[in-house]
Amino acid sequence: MRLATWNVNSLKVRLPQVMDWLQAHQPDVLCLQETKLEDVNFPERDIRAAGYHAQFSGQKAYNGVAILSKTPPDNPLIAVPGLSDPQKRVLAANVNGVRVVCLYVPNGQSVDSEKYRYKLDWLAAVMAWLKDELTANPRLAVVGDFNIAPDERDVYDAKAWEGQVLFSAPERKAFQDLIAVGLQDSFRLFDQPAQAFTWWDYRMNAFKRKMGLRIDHILVSDSLAEVCRSCTIDIEPRKAERPSDHAPVMVDLEI
DNA sequence: ATGGTAGAAACTCTA
Image (cartoon, rainbow, N blue to C red; front, side):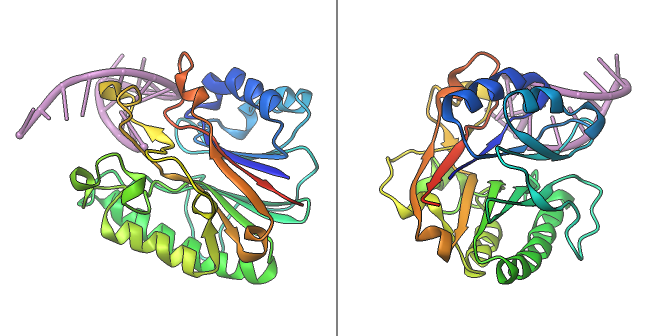
């Protein structure tokens, strides 16, 4: 089973690239973030034509998540128990016996902003819910744009980023708390090249200058970690014309 | 110290 995640920063703009990527990599599941589409505008017909079922929870202009899967999903969940949030950032579904949770974690803007507080509170509520999800589903994958670089290796210039949003100590603590629930960062289960990132700012030629962060993750429960054979970042789509600022991440699970 | 880019929407916000 191949499971992937990609923040597409507008599915309307990126649909052709998503179609190409599905065709090329044939994931069994692809989780999307920042679709920026209301559900009535979701390109379900195109996705179906490509051989995928689609679940989606979106809104106009901001946020929006989706789970595409070759086999029909079941037990969908859109609202996190105990978290009342008008922002569409969470979607969960069972696919092939795996509970897949697609997250678009709030960006946080800056550490002194209200949005940063919202990010930390949101993470605490999601973590509490994921404990229950893990109890109910030993085969759990939590994937998406976490907007957190877990450690120094995940930032092109850790000194410059220390204390900044996406790499501040409270955010990294929140990430570790999530891991402590019973999840593993699939990327670090394997030897990886240095300077492996999933996001590069559109500005200042950040991609060409390799000024990136690894903020998109695939976390797996222990039972999935046992059958996880690889985790890779595909930077090819970031080289395309009109790219998303994020690259897709994928794992192969021997299931 | 500030601005740089992109997307969506509506002359600004979010990332």
